[in-house]
Length: 112
Length: 113
Image 1: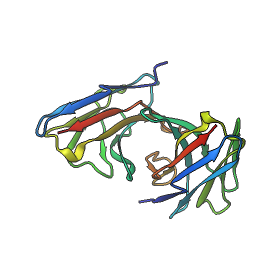
Image 2: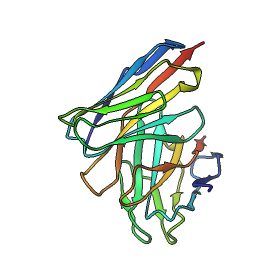
Image 3: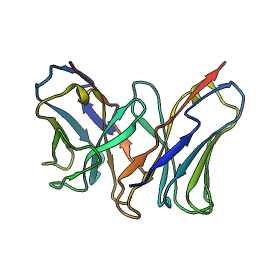
Image 4: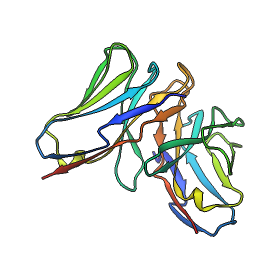
């Protein structure tokens, strides 16, 4: 099984550009999450989706939007990228009654 | 929200030595997860603890959750270079059922051959 697949792995954006980070899971998990990881800050939750069609804000949602139209996909959008959004982004999924998250390998985003 | 403090922030040990990483919570831990991350890669799930006093082991790694459910420790016996990486603890934020994890900032482990 592929588990959780994130695309792209690397991306460089100019300030003000928009883009969508893609996340797909093949484990039929109900819940999916987007985190960002920054040096000295650890992992911080951006948005999560408890089930298909629902999304909720996490700790740091400003500047991002998400969509969960299909159970297996969770998309993270940046409408107008800012240098402060330079980070490593991780997608994860879990069973509602599961034993922890399965993480993707990350997307390293640089905004210049 | 729950805050998790990990200690130490970084650790350098000689191959073959034992080590312990701690994770302390400001609130009761309903579910405590340990993950390992190698540079440039995602997080690999190691273990989950839920009950006070619980202890789990996998190969040379043992994790414990104290009776009061506010502190967990991860112990590695006879460390190897393959153990090097960043270890993160994560905790269920809102109690049973929510599965939104808050993470500590991580402990960077280096193992010198």
